[in-house]
Amino acid sequence: MNKTLKYIATTLVVIVLVLGSFAGGFVTGHLAPYIGLPGIPNSQAPTVSGPATASPDQQSATPKEYQALFSPFWEAWNLVHKNFVDQPLDDTALMRGAISGMMQALGDKHTTYMDPKNYKEATASLDGEYEGIGAYVDTTTEFLTITSPIPDSPAERAGLQAGDQIVGIDGKTMKGTIAEVARTKVLGPEGTTVHLTILRKGADKLLEFDVVRAKITMKSATGKMLDNNIAYLQITTFGAKTTPELTDALKELMAKKPKGIILDLRYNGGGFLQTAVEVASQFIAKGVVLYEKHGDGTRTTYDIMPGGMATDTKIPMVVLINEGSASASEIVAGALQDSGRAKLVGVTSYGKGSVQLWLPLTGDNGAVRVTIARWLTPKEHTINEIGLTPDVVAKMTQEDFKAKRDPQLDAAIATIQSLLNSTPLPTSMPTSIPTP
Image (cartoon, rainbow, N blue to C red; front, side):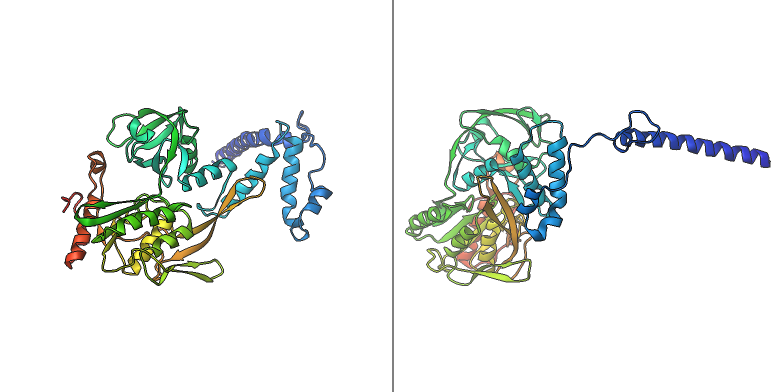
C-alpha cells in the first residue's frame, strides 16, 4: 500500500512539474526576448537606442518642483521616440493624447479634452450654426440616439425618427464607440453623404439611410402664441445667441398680453452657465438662480439679474422637462420651480448637477472641458444623478412621436388652465389627453 501511495504521489509531482513547464514555457515565450534567459538561444534582450531618462533640455523645461514627478513621462516620451516601429512620430498627437489621458484619469465623464476639430464643432452648434444632418441627439446612451429631427432638415426628410439609435456610420459599427465621438462622425461638410445604420424599436431588422448633410442654421430660442392666448417659448440650447433671441421673442409675445407662459426645455442638453442665469432672470424678479459648490467647500452665489420681461407672477408659467433636459436646462427649471414662479411638467430630468468651463488651449490645440463645481438649486437641492422631479408627470411614447401627438404639451396647457382657474393640479396626466 505504501509503495502504491508513493507511486501515485510521485506521478502527481511529475504531472505538476510537466504542467508547470507548459505554463512556464507560455510565460517564457513571452518574456524571453525581453529578459534574456541564460542558456536559451536567441533570448537576448533587444537593443534600446540611447538612454531614456530626461534630457537636460527636458529637465530645464520642467519646473524644478515637478522634475521628479515628470521624470517617468519624459522617460516614456524618449522611449517611444527612440524605439517605436513607425517613425517619425507625430509629436502633436502625442501631446494631445497625454492631455486626453490626464482628463480621463480624473474619473469624471464630463471632464474631457476636445481636439481642435471637436471643439470647433461643439462651439459651432452653440452658436446656432453647423454642418450635419439636423437632429437633436442624446449622447448619454450606449449608441448615439436621435431625440428629435429638426423640422425640414436632412434628417427629417430622410425619414429618421425620434428614438432611432445610430448603430453604424458609413458601414462601421459604433458598438463600443462613445456616443459623443459618434456624433462628430455624423457631422461633416455640406453636400456630403453619411450612411447611417439605424436600430429602431419595433422594426424587425436594421434600417439603412443615406443622408446628405447640409448647413444647419437654427435659432436656439423661438416663440409663438398658442390657442387660449398662451405664450409658448422653446429653448434648444444655451448658447451665445440664446439671450438676444429669447428677448426678441418675449418682446413680441408679451406685447400680446398672454394669460400664461410655457417654456419648453425638453431635450435641451445645456450650454453656457451665464446664459442660464440670463434666461432665468427673464422670468424671476429677484432672488437666487443657483449656488455653485466648489471642491474646497466654498460656494458661489448667482443672483437674478434685474429687468426681466416676464416676471409678473399673475401670469402663470409652466416649464416642460424630460429625460433629455440637462445641465443649464436644469439650472433654469430648478430656479423657476424653487422660486414658485413655475410648475414643472413632464418626466424627471437627466440629472447633470455639475458645471463645466470650456477652456481653449493655446496654439489652436482645442480645449479642455473641466468640471469646476457641483450646483444646488435656490432651496439647496442637488440634482446630480437624481434630476428634477416634475410637479405634474406626463409621459410621451414612441406611438405619440409617430402620430405627431404631444401629450406633454397638452398637459402643460391643462396645467396653465388649472392655475388660471385656481383648481388643484393633478400629480400626473394620462399619456394622451385632449387639448383644452
